[in-house]
Each structure stands twice: as C-alpha cells, then as structure tokens.
Image 1: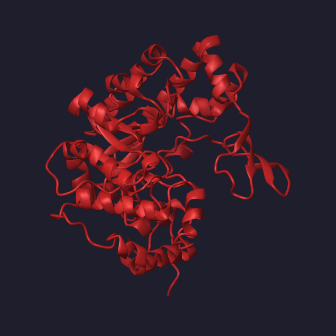
Image 2 (image 1 turned 90 degrees about the horizontal axis):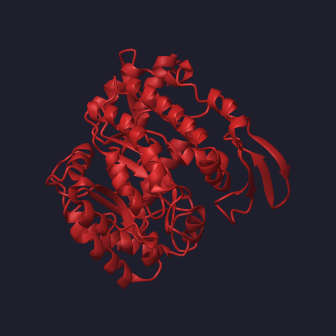
Length: 441
C-alpha cells in the first residue's frame, strides 16, 4: 500500500470526515473503523492504527456477545421506517411524528466499567467510546469550536508516590490523582484564578482573534456537515461553569459577592469569545443543535441566585442564541447537574431550551418540567440511576414513569448522569432491554 503525505488542509478534512461520519454516542465523537475518503481525486482506505483495531475488536465482541443476545440487545430496532439519524433527531426534538427516539446514553464512571468486567462485560470495553460502540448507541457529530486556553498551562508532575501524583494540569489546576483508580474525581488543591490579579493572564489565553483557533479547512467542514446523515452539534462553551472550574467553588462563591464586577467582566469576555467563533463556524457548517456546559447547581438549587443569573447570564445567552437562531439552530442544550428548577425559566428566556441530564435525585424531573413548560422545553436524560441499582421492578417502573413524556415528543431519555458502580452489569443490560422494548429502539 502506498503512503500518502497529506497537506494541512487535507489533514483537516480527514479529521472532519472522521468526526462527522464515525461518531460515538450522544455529543461525543470518538472513533472510526475503516474509512474511505477522497484525496486528490482518488479514493483511499485509511486504517488508523491501534485505535481502529480496538474499534474493530469491539464491534466483533458486540456481534458475538452472549449477554447482549440474551437481553435482546443485538436485535435491530423494532421501529425503523428509514429515517436517517439526523432526520430522527430533528423530528424528535421538534415534536414531529417519528418511528423511534434516538438511542443515546450519558456514559460511565471508570469504577463502573471495572466492576462490570467481573460480571461479564468484555475487559476490552474500558472507556466510554468503546462502550458506546459495544452497546450500539446512535451516533452524533460536531464541528470544531476551539474555545480553550491558548496557550494552555504546561502539564507538570509536582510530586509522586506509590499511591498518587500531585499534578498541575493543562487547565492550571493543582490536584492529587490516585494511581489505583479508587477515585475518578481528583482531590483539588489550588486553582489558577484566585482573584482580579490573575484575570489578565487568563484573559490573554482566551483571545478570540488568535488565528490558531480557526486553523481548520472550513470549506471541507461545510461540505461534510451538509452531507452528513447524523445530527451535528456545536459547542457554546460556558458562562459560569468554567469560572467555577478556574476559581473553585469557595472562591467563585465569595467573588460573586466581594467582586461581582469581575464575574461579569469574565462572562462578557467569554461571550465575545463564543460569539466570535460561533459566527465564523456557522458561515460554513450545517448544525442541528448547540451544547453548553454549566454545572452550577447542587441538590437543593443553584450556586448563584436566580437574580444574579438573570442579570449576568440571560442577556449574554440571548446574544449567543440569537446567532444560533439566525442559522436555524433552535435546539440549544445546557448540561447542568443538580437541581435546576429555579433556573429553567431563565434559561428559556435566554433561548436555551433543552435541559440535560435532569438528575432525579436532585429534583430535576422531566415529567414535572414538561407539565410545567409544555413544548417550550426539550429534555434529555432523566432516568434515575439510583433505581437502576435496585432491581428489575424498579427499572420497569422508572421507564414507565417517563413513558408518556417520551411519547409526547421532545425528549430523549437516558441515565441522568454517568452510570455509577453500584449498578450491576445485569441490571444495566436489563435497563437497556426494557428501554429498547418500550421505545422501539
């Protein structure tokens, strides 16, 4: 086989082709198996080394897996009238008649997969993208939005023992990471944004005019996204969640009261960054949904007051969603854990209309939100992970609880966060089986 040296533009087109046509499950683009693309007038087959070999292996494992077969998870969808994944997603999120809802799931903690390896999950399935392939979830795609720090901090190991490492990551956060996998969540020690004196250094890393943020073949992106038969998303970043990550919970909470002008100044800069990149990307790309991330609530309510949210965030969300609406993108998702009930009306006022992942134990219930807001609100998630850990009857009741809301449209049900390790593998497969039967997946 002849080797082909690709130009920068051709490499960008390759990345986009991979991203668009071989996505993983919901909101995550991951891997390809075997790819044929057009380069300089010739079709060439590309195999992407170890990662592709792993994907091939996962698909073979899926096809031969006795547990998946036992639970009926290898059967084709019971309701499939020929819609593409893109058409099905659009119709679902616009309350149109559809053969079946999209089949999406949130993901898994590493401890969960480790437990399941002892209960029948092939050991090769050791991360989310492999699990997405193994369980056969529907693909989605996305276009690039380079909203990160440029330059990022240098990743440095500051201390190392047999049990842990203390690192400063590329996000500037100093934390302790355990080596034995006993915790997926690091122990945070120090944050890069402690107050106004640190903001100039962070701000320079968020320059919307940095040419490196636009270093993609946008013509190829436009062509690929217009031809794609899977739903295509775009990131709209974060207005508060990123600030919390950079400051830590205690500092951001105090700063909201001690220096609210700083919080608003950072949000304004983030809004300019997001809208600048968004306007550029949407000159070329055809996009079906936008996704933002906040994680600004706990189990009893938000970190900041609704009044602060209304003053600081709603007008800036409107500037972002006005651009989306201009380009026909009216599915705007916010990823926010915890109890979001006091913020939903404000997100809707800002043009953000899809709530995700709807953590039931915190009180964010898709059934209640649909009863309150009707078709004004779209929903994703809302299957109580706690019930999955209990048993078959509880799983059946949980699916039945949301059935009418799912059937009313505008709702893609899945576990309300990463599936935790107290859910057995058989319980999870049973959940997928019950969901498949209930909704024709």
